[in-house]
Length: 126
Image (tube, rainbow, N blue to C red; front, side, top):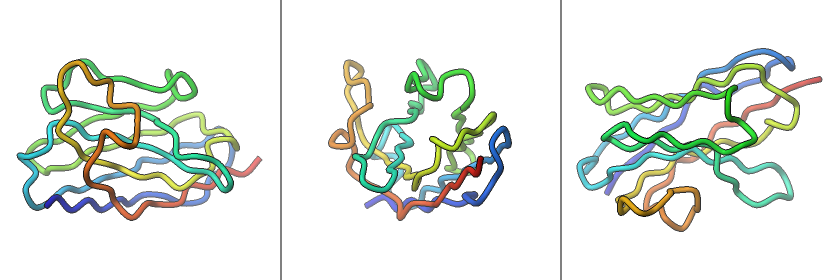
């Protein structure tokens, strides 16, 4: 089992920044990819970004490319999502997820992941 705990969400004005954290514990060696997803009210969960423990390549959704940065601190078993130039359409509950993916898998689908955190709310006001 892998436990994931997200933190860092909150309310921010458009154009502002937030940094989300995803702290992993338990059998973290069983997962080689951490992904961030988000879900807005009435919408499906959508991919945001993912990072492999090998660090390459990092993959972002087009909607956040150039504004969000995913990074990993292996010593702390923590993955970060730095979100800059936030827009109202970024408002959602953000989830991190862990999985053991094959090299050929992109990691942009929720069903590729085995473990999920409880989510953290991000609200961007206009």
